[in-house]
Image (tube, rainbow, N blue to C red; front, side, top):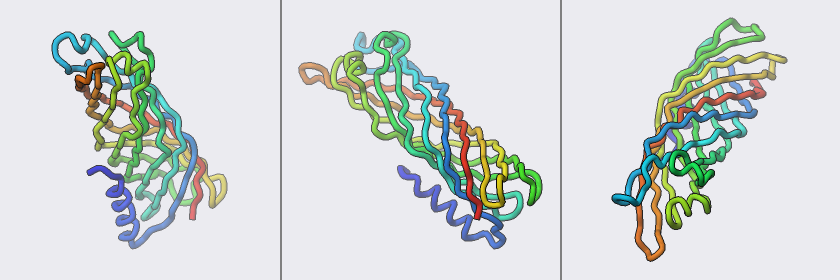
Length: 227
């Protein structure tokens, strides 16, 4: 499955099916995505073609986040978290260290949570926790000029989609009955298979592969509107 539509469909179905829906919220703000990536060395191309310990390191990113929440009673609800596709820079490590930034990629990562919020109606401060599922699709993946040099020719990149469990914890503070300030920290299992296809001078093609475990932690601060 290669789109985020199943997540949106699930959120809408849950919303429509709730007989006692109490409130809805939309929110927008900023997000910081901390990446603690781990990957195996790149392999492929035969003996001597790919230097040993050719590793990659994915950098952090910032983005605009937004989303929709619907609570079915005073405690239980769903949260569809979205965001503009952030750009992650990728740097060489190990034998690729000297090439610095070798590629970049953007990611679409809608996440659907089932939330439980603590406290009671009328409380200004409502902590909440959530568990759910994340879908990540990588787009606009490009090798830099330095990356092409490291690979030995023009290189095309492809990263597989990822599905994984997600969790979040946060606080919502009601500034007025309609407006709130929200802060969250979230994480998800995001793992992708990378294929790098290099066309070398003379026309020969080398294919290299690795698997990247991104280990993201996302910190957000947003303004919410309740209706």
